[in-house]
Length: 310
Image (cartoon, rainbow, N blue to C red; front, side):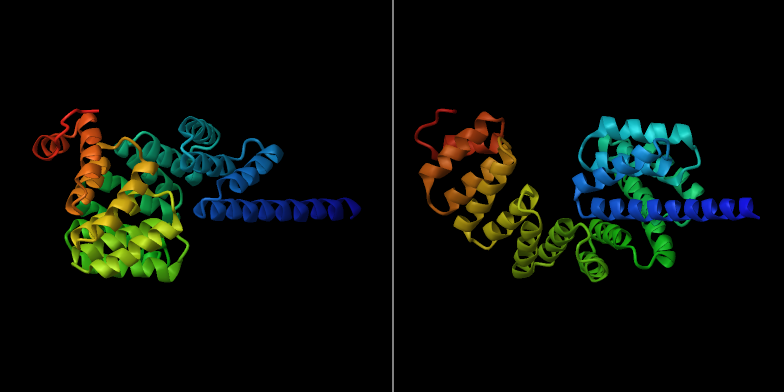
C-alpha cells in the first residue's frame, strides 16, 4: 500500500511539473508576440536546462530566434526538434517560420505549415502561416480560401483577420481591409500594433482619406518609432496634401533609420524642391543621383547650377 501511495505522489508531481512547463512555455509565446525576446528566450533556456530534448521548447526557441533575425540558430533548433519528434506540430511550425522569414522559401515553408496542421488541426497559427506562404507564392485565391475556412473555426485569431485585410487590400478592396484591421484591434490591441495601423493607414489613403491615414501612420510610429516604412508612408501623404516641410521631416527620419536609400533621399529632395528650397533640394538630389537614382540625376541637370555629383 505504501508503494502504491508513493507512486501516486510521483505521478501527481509529474503531471504538475508538465502543466507548469506548458504554462511557462505559453508565457514565452506571449512574450514573443509582444516582441519581448530576451525574457522569452530566458524562459526557453530555463526549460531546456531541465529537459534538453523537449521538441516544443526547442520549437518555441526557434521561433524566438527567427523573430530576432538569428536564422542559423533558429534552423538548428527547428531541425533538432524535428529529429527528436517528426510529429511535433511546434517543430514543423518553427521550421516553416525560419524557411518563410529567413530564407524566403515559400514553397518549403508551405509544406512545413501543412505538416504542422496534419500534426495538430487546432494549431491556428499554422493556418495563418500557410496563408502567408501562399501569398508569398502569389497564390491569392488559395490564400483567401485558407483564411476564410480557418476563421470559421478560429474566430478570435487576430493574425487571420490581419491577413484577410492584406488580401482584401491586394484585391483593391480597402474598405473591407479596414474592417478586418479593426477586428484585429478589437480582439487584441497589442498584436503587431505598428503593422496593423500602418496597413490601415494605407487603406485609408487608398480611400482618399488623408487625415485618417495620417492618424494611423502616427499611431504606427508611436507603436514602433524605429519603423522607417511608417515615416515614409506618412511623409507621402503629407507631400500629397502639400505639407512639404512636414513631409521632408518624415523622409529625413526614414533616412536616419534606413540610410543611403536613394528613393528616400530623392523624396527628401522633392519635398524641399516643392517647398522652394532649391539649395537643400539639390543637395539631396545630388546624393540620390550618386546612389544610382536616375530621376534624381535628371533633377540635378534641370535644376541645380552646381551639377557636381557627390
